[in-house]
Length: 627
Image (cartoon, rainbow, N blue to C red; front, side, top):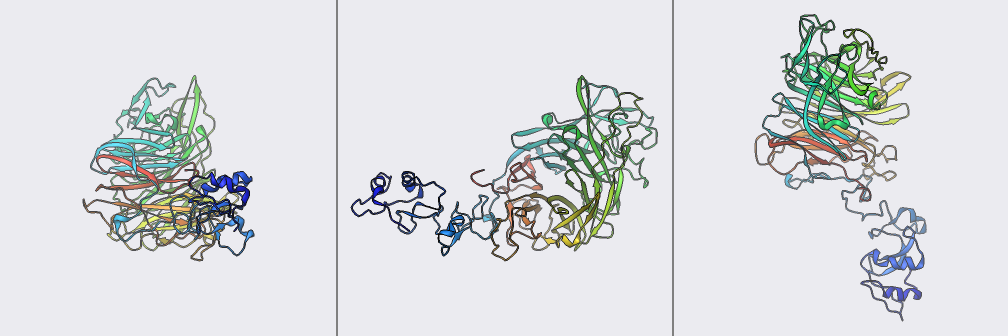
């Protein structure tokens, strides 16, 4: 440490809040480093120099010393060669010793922004940003069906209630708040959107197609940069449930309108999924293509893949059973899939539609005793991982290659000539064991590594038993040529996220973030692996929980979240618990996580009451310079 030179004594006397003794060249008094900055300017010392004038924490005077920007007594790591004996600061931008929500490892333990749950629920820390109303739904006392489509920096969301569906798109500057609906061209051969009839195409037993009501009973969404893919189970005309697919152009989301456009040579799925291909059978709504003869559809799930506008596609999975299936399942039923491919053609105006894989006929990937939605994860440019409770226990995994594009649309031909499309390529990856009976599986892909890619599953066990647990497991998929396999040797063990069985734990959701959980190059205080720039991120899992209700209604819920590191598939901090719990006695259900373009994880949940709404906020913290 060096004192102030005489040549700077006059400059020091000009410092606000400082005094100087010229005869004795006493360093000026100060309270902050900023009060010493003029001395560096006069000497031509850059602000990022390793030796500069700063306010000493011990003497509160401006002295020339090794850089300690946060004045916590630890020198900047990049300046340690000036005095190897001094302790080094892993983060010289913020004072060490106390972790704050800022995207940095303030306490130098290798973990970023850890927050711990307190014994008293009233003092539990809130997320990075308290929830706000995102999409208003109106007066809703019954839950109904909630569907989400996270992806491409935003989330699409919908709530089905009493036959109608509220719909919204939230993310960045883009937002929409409207009602989801279907419309069809007034004529099957129409190439214009100027005349649209509200409602759904309805196949009749005589082989004709009419117009009927869409009665929304269940739904899910998939989101790309340009498309919102939809899968809706409608009971209008089919009491067991008819699955309808389509898309809304993201730039036109404020309209909330899915256009079903035939004829069959244009789209083999415009009249609904699993329609009798001949349109003349006894079962024109559901069941015609199934060997089991099952009717109906329930619990649709959508995963969407960015292929750029008219090349976008999605995979839809659902349970081949009537819509009224119990939420906790029952007898095994088929899990069916169909890829929906967005297409466009210009006839003066550009019009769009979706067509289905396998000539519009669903394919079976297995059977499940569960009652939750099948999980779908998207490996961009490669394919989809489908996960669900297996018949004999455990979780069944199937990999579905991305769907092949159909031939270019041929404007000529008879309207009732079916549009041919390829069968989906499905690889059975086997079944992973679980501790109990799993259901409600959620899937999210992570980092690409040499030879493959990380993927995570979250699920719950003990559905409806009053003793439920939430689990997580990180797996590794390899790809040898065109073959995808599960590599157990590079996968990690399952991790329980609930300390003990809890009543009414809801279906979990998860999201992957590339960075922001571990500080690269900083040794962990608990001795676990040190992260690099390639593995400093991981997953966040959220679920609704009733184990610690606030004072209030019996159906009050809170939403919990936990962070898991990709470097070893374990909890970032074993004692950490994030509580997404806004004030008030309201029922909060069905959380969903999504990742913004700047890699911030945000959350959404549905809140019942008067009025009901989708609410949400930020769950992870951005660095202050970027936030």
